[in-house]
Amino acid sequence: MLRSLFLAAAGSARLERLVESAPVTKGVVRRFVAGGDAGEALRACRELADDGLAVSLDLLGEDTTTAEQAQATRDEYVALLARLHEAGLTPAAEVSVKLSALGQRIDEKMAYEHARAVCAAAAEAGTTVTLDAEDHTTTDATLETLVELRRDFPSTGAVLQAYLRRTEADCRELATAGSRVRLCKGAYAEPESVAFQSSLDVDKSYVRCLNILMSGAGYPMVATHDPRLIAIAEDRARWFDRSAGEFEFQLLYGVRPEEQARLAARGDTVRVYLPYGNQWYGYLMRRLAERPANVAFFARAVSSR
Ligand code: FAD
Image (tube, rainbow, N blue to C red):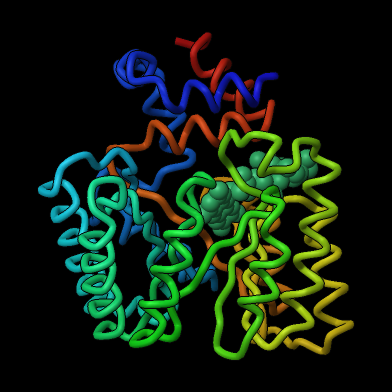
């Protein structure tokens, strides 16, 4: 119920204005978002790197409605990658990109060209790109773009969402040599026709997908905070003889930092997804939808003002 409310709120421009103008919001945002600009993101990235954590930086923004905005997003990524390289933070830091932020809803070809430019800048900086997964209406287009990008930039990563009924088949398709696949549960409000609705069904699908990826030839990126799924992933890695550099865990900035440290201390590769920028509203609403405790945190911050 709460989940649906927050996911609906994620798409409301009116609520967005209201939440953005509330003075309390700043503190809450700071927990999940590294900062408003690349400088702050780089500082957070350095701190994580000093703790032995890899990073995927995400410039927040999914409401791109003009070609100018799409171009500005591309340019920001290109500049960010150069700064990461200069700061010696690559290859441990890569970037995550939403094709919608590069204009996928305006013109798919343009978004593809921008994504190519970002991949080229990443290659130049000695690192790579992962294409975030968005709502199910974009899955085909995003996976087609991935195939095109991988021709010249084979390390470009995909994201698959276990809540989608199609994902087991997509895992089979992508569990090939050199293929980097992030497996997450999925963060959007999706209809029953395309997505499992109960958390049990989503978890079962996650495990089936994990089995395919861990037993395949690609590089699985296990993106979850769920202790049961993390334990199952550890078990499957042992079962399929994968050592620490042959898969990785991924967690979101600000979520279960003690677990991030525990996994890294065991010698596992752990990557923190680090969002930054001013367009944090949709991202924050999805985090609140995921976990009642996050809502309580938000409510406490509101009531303490
Ligand atoms: P949940 O079902 O949210 O949580 C399961 C359990 O984990 C909880 O019951 C609790 O025990 C534990 N837990 C969760 N949060 C906390 C916490 N704050 N403190 C303590 N325990 C906690 N979604 C997309 O749709 N597209 C993407 O491209 C995408 N990229 C992602 C990248 C990364 C690195 C990660 C981690 C997630 C990404 N997601 C993405 C979001 C993802 O789909 C889920 O919405 C999100 O990760 C929550 O699911 P979960 O697996 O953590 O499990």
